[in-house]
Length: 187
Image (tube, rainbow, N blue to C red; front, side, top):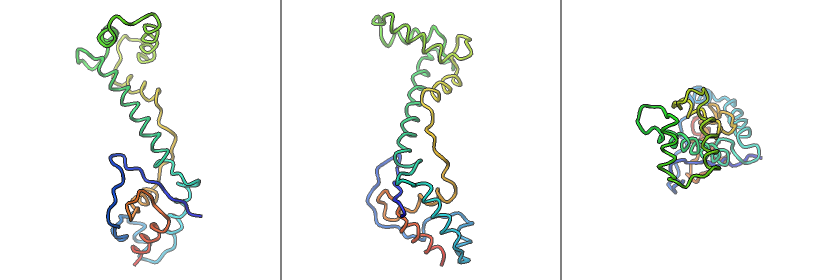
């Protein structure tokens, strides 16, 4: 049984539009050539890619997996932004003095022993080389450590091309749409 591939548009929700022409979907040049020669191989490869990307109906990079990737990327960006804001003198690094000053600016005199311990732990985690400065490289490494990229396999050429095959713009790719695109390009 062929599954539905949910698409995720990172910038906006799927908009209802008129159906697209299957012949307008861009395919890799090698696939175009094989289809023009009447080969069955592109159908087999796209079918295998379809089944690999959606073995249980959920695509690992798009859909639920993409939500995890986007969330992790947003969390990494927040870490990076937070530490970058600690660079009060704008020299591209964060000193412990700036780190503590930023904490005082942000929380005032409300920091207790527990909060200072958390700040010390965070500083130690960020200043990996122990030189008393946090560089952008160290901030980036910390962000990746705190929010790793979820494990997702690369889509491959067929998988990437397949994602353009949402002919009715409903946010899903059905095997019928994939077949329609391949058939229109094989003329």
